[in-house]
Length: 194
View 1 (cartoon, rainbow, N blue to C red):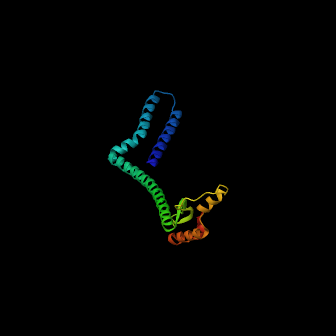
View 2: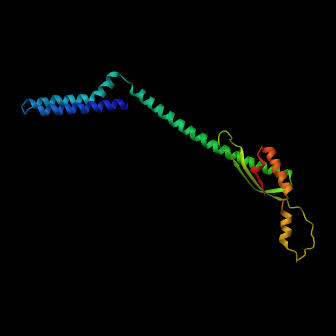
View 3: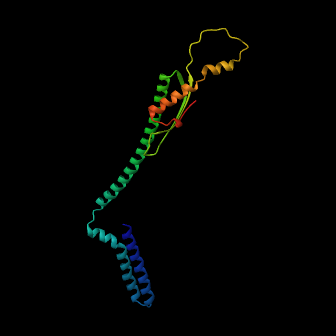
């Protein structure tokens, strides 16, 4: 299409230059009027030539329009489908991460006597390792047990007792780390339990 337009414009420019050259060479006479008329018809024929070719070649403009329209719709479809695929991939990764967090919390809280305060999971997003856990960080505390009412000594430091009650010992943290490592096939160095 662009090639045809280029050839058409070149033809118009060539004929105008040629006509200008002929007008310069022609002397002022009565024949000049008739020559200008003939040259004007030639310019009109050059300008109308593509339209005459379309009419004579019996090209179905409606078919051409539908072909172009179909190609544009195909390109639009490819663009929209790629957008949808990317959004679905993002939603799938987000859903997987949420379910993985829930699963880890449920396993740890049901197997050990702790509450998970915070969980942070970083997943691999590259195609070859998609969904692999890069880093997992847990913050846990021991579940509060029912404590019988006892006499409180006013002179004791309350902060020491509070930290002893909620602290999680290192053995339990290491068990949790090994358990997560075995279940989810993650290296121990990628798991942090606070």
